Amino acid sequence: MGKHLIIGGAGFIGSNLSRLLCEQGEAIHILDNLSLGRESHVHALVEAGKASLQVADATIPEDLNTAFTNYGPFDDVYHLAANSDIQKSATNPDIELQNTFLTTYQVLSAMRRFACKKLVFSSTSAIYGDKQNELIGEDCPGIKPISYYGGAKLASEAFISSFAFMNDMQVWICRFPNVVGDNATHGAVFDFIQSLRLNKTQLTILGDGSQTKPYLYVRDLVDAILYIRNVAHNAYNVFNIGVDSATSVDRIAHIVTEEMNLPDVTFHYTGGNVGWKGDVPRFSYDNSRLRGLGWKPAFESDEAVRLATRAILSGTKD
Image: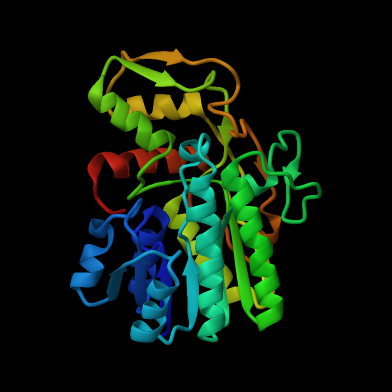
């Protein structure tokens, strides 16, 4: 049994990762400022004595020092803290500087201070930019992010690479696309449900609804992250995590209305083929590197959207 520090462990993905690690008998310490995370997401784990929770800020060195001093030593760090709501930062790049890049820098600095040598980092398909007509692999040339979020994640990867080399760290970079499922706090599925709870007769859809992307179920994602951590043994490991199918925004809207039993909803489109500036309307992921390790998702894109809709509507764990 190991002991793990999970930065952002009360958030959407982090809480699902925390739960899976606890199910596997691992000891975890969660550090989260609860700006996007929720104490309720991990309350049962803390109450059962399976996890400890520190409400703290990963951009503050003293908070990280407290984690390593009072709760360590840690076998590794899972760094999931970031502003994951790309649309939110479209008008304010400072959000990404503070919440996405500086968290990474401070986590790396703390690992260096405390000689913690293993890092698992949640990156994103947004680093690749707008490559609509390409099958995007990990070694894709000409990476050019078009959102502040993608830029902050790519800068984070660059710093991780340099810290790994200078401090003999082992690193696992996990790049994933849109993730859906239990404990979501934003995203198309969550936003559609919230909107329809307020108005059951009409739904506003950003763009023209044709935007099409792979959607990954959160339980598949955290399973893949742990699989990569345990199976990939290079000093520096980079993997796309995704499904081989995709779902349009229009299809998501239909799945949500079906699951909410709302057959007469009128859809209103804002127009254009993007939801907001910095949005990539469609892309295709090359998942062959991870498939070559022997992992594949349990659910394809449409299934993931439907399961996520049911999970959010029920408010229960899968």
